[in-house]
Length: 426
Image 1 (tube, rainbow, N blue to C red):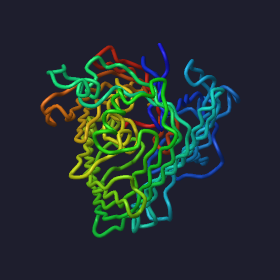
Image 2 (image 1 turned 60 degrees about the vertical axis):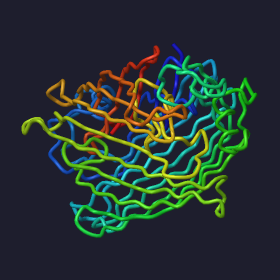
Image 3 (image 1 turned 180 degrees about the horizontal axis):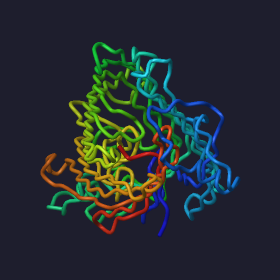
């Protein structure tokens, strides 16, 4: 089994590695203070385990508040990327003294491998005191390795030109693509009424030096670039973002109840540096049902994410697809962009349940269903591809509801893998 990363977290799948590989192994607690919203004395997390191992017999201090910051070393090895070493940090904090202010979350990671694959990112989702403003954004700088499985949802080839067959790639052949990548995205939302935000921002995605073992135009990306007028070795997608967001989630790391909904339009424009003009609509809806008053962490969670090209052309490696949501976590069972099209939709359902009385261990089962169009006439919602699996959760930081998520998922075409994340997929 080879190892594959689902950015910005970790997945181990039986395919060619993606843009980076990050393995979370243990946490180092910091001294920064964080005020929990509930009595956590009966819960047990990694910090309690660390205390019991390093200081056996020492009782927990009820006045000591766990940190909102976790630091995770990234150490791994893979034949494609070599040996990797790096570090990742996740921070959760409530800004100001208003208990109704939503939690802010930020994360960063830096890693390098012996085969010169480099990845660095910073992302944040910040709510100012009183939820007056919400700032969302990220910066990514990387030298990457990405797999490509062709366009569409993996249906059988129905006849057409040789170029159509190459683009559709019904055999699911994998093409490894190397490139240098830069992304900057920032959105600012303003609270206009209770739980409702409107926002705007910008996004710049630049990819250069795109190469692979097969550098001919007789590849899915090569055919797509010729048809849509993109250069073969570089592109830029630069545009404006306009969004509406509604949220009642009780916690962004692991929600027990509430709704998160976001709808946005991205308008790429050549006059600000985009290779092509385009307009895309993106929707994100999540609903959480707590199934027990005594065990609120027993949850049924629903997620639907979609992206739809309204007009223009989008670069091949920027097409919406598997794990192309904001956190790169959709479609467990498949690697990043395993399925993709100009129109794409993913629906997921997950059951979360406690295992141990002290909440240290819990479990999940999940299913997902992806659909996409292609350039041979397949329409969105015409063909679906399933994924399913189960996982274990280890309570990482009870003050912030941060947990270590270990999932094993299965898909079609022999796709399956182990996915390791901090926090839930959605």
